[in-house]
Length: 458
Image (cartoon, rainbow, N blue to C red; front, side, top):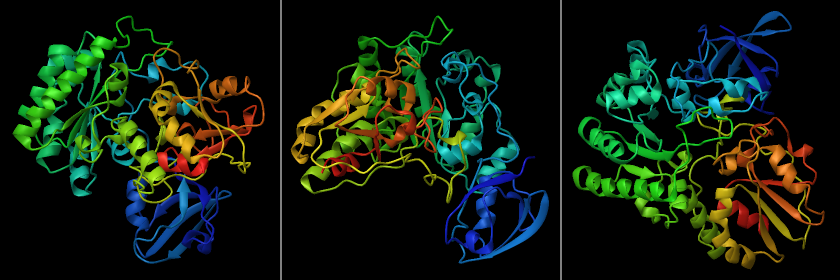
C-alpha cells in the first residue's frame, strides 16, 4: 500500500505549525496505517494527532495539537491509499471507453469503489461490493452513497453492465436501504435498450423493491466520436420527450405513494425535447444537482436573484467530471480543492465581455442575456465552444478542454474580457492537461454559478 503524499500545507494551519511539508509521505496516523482519506479524516479529527511521516527517505514523528474536529490543513495526493477498486463491468455506454488516446493516465481509471461514491458522488454498480464493505459503510456512517441502477430487470441490467453479477448485485442496494443508508440512484438511458417500457418497468421496480431510495436520476448517455459501440447513439427529440413524459408520470405516482417525486430527468432531456425546465420546488431541494439535474434552473434563479438583490445560495460544489482523479479533499469529505481557479487576471474596466460556455450552457444562458446585459455597463455576449475534442453529442460545459477553448479564442481579437467557468478546470488544468496560460488570450476564471457571473459583470 503506497503512503499518502502531502501536496499542499495551508499557511498558518496546525500542520504548518507542526512542521509538515509538501512532499511528506504519511505512513500512519495515531498508529493506524490508514487505507483512505475517510480513515485519515477520522484520525485527523482528534485533538492530538501523531503522524509518522517519511521525508527524504527518513522517517520522523510529527505531533499536532489542535481543537477536536479542526482540520489539519493538509491536502493529499489521492483519496485512497491502498488501491482504487476498479470496475469489472463493460457497459457499452461507459464514457471511459470513449476517451481519445494519450490523455493523462488517471483519466482512464474505471472505478467502482464505494469510497469514491461517498467522497465524490461517483456512481457504483455494487457488482464488487461485499459483506465487509456493507459492515464498514454502516458502522462508519458512510452516507450518502450513489448507485447505478440502469434497470431493475435482472436480465436487462446484466446486459447493460455486460456482467452476470449485474443481475444480482442490486441485493446490496436493498441491504444498504434496510440499514438506513441514504442512497441516490441513477439510470443511464440507452435508446432502444432501457427506455420506453423497460424504463417504466425499472421505475415500477424501484417503487416495489427500493421505495426508500432517496432519489433517482434519469440521464441520457453521452456518445463521443470515439465510441466503438454501434448500438450506442444519442436520443432523438421524440425519444427525449418520451423519457420526460415517463419520468413526470412516475413523479405523480411516487408522490401519491411515497409523498415525494423521487425520480427526476436530467436537464439535457428538457433541452433535447425543447421543453421548459420544471419549477424550482419540483426538484425538491435539488438532491441530484451534481448529476446535471436542476443545474439549469438553479443557475437561472441565481442570476435573477443576484440581479434583483435577492441572492440564491449556490447549490453544492461544482466539481466537474473526473473530479476525484487529481487529489483528495483538503478538508472534510467534499471540500473544494486548492488550485481549481487557475490563473485569474485583473478585469479591465469598461470592456466588452464574452462568456465562454459549452453548447448546452449556451442554450441555458441565451434567455438570460437581457438580464445579464442590464447589470453590465458594457456589451455582453456568449462564446459557444463546440466540443470537438470528444465530439459526438458531448455538449456539457464541464467537459470542455483547453484545445477547444483555445480554438475559439484564436478567432477572437484582444480587447474583450473573456470569462471562463471554473468547472472546466481541476487543479488549474483542463481535461486535456493544458492550463489557462496556454490559451491565446487571458481569461478570467469565475465560479460556475449565476451569482458569481453577475458579480463579474458588475
